[in-house]
Image 1 (cartoon, rainbow, N blue to C red):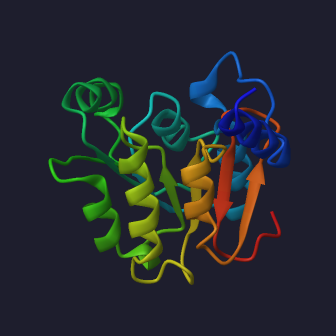
Image 2: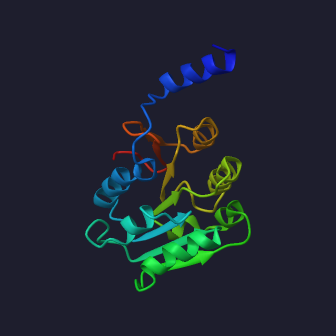
Length: 185
């Protein structure tokens, strides 16, 4: 085994990596549902609209306290798919952005939200920039809980360490991280 593979194998054991889920696009759902029950978020910002995440946020039985979901997406085709599915929900504000997502996240008034979800970008370096930029957003450490999907990725894991409080859910892979606020979840 080469040195890089040995290092990655040690890293995977260190973070408690398990086999990739048969449904990797929804491993964050149990964490979101747990947060809905414990935090009762009223306002959510979503970086990267998702077939599962957007639907979970707008499901009145799972997120009964949700008053407003602000979603940002940079893929026009995916934006169209998700927006058509939820167009009739008045709580849903869908934003198609042409600028890099990190430029949106750094300008976010984080204190206006109870929860921020990050699962954006096709390129890992772009999501990394979103996480790092969000850490600089006004009110981020006093405001919302931040949830990041795919935190088993070394770049994302390192970026999340800039947040003062964090918990990683490693029971499912891809893993989900919860950042900020006191973590008595």
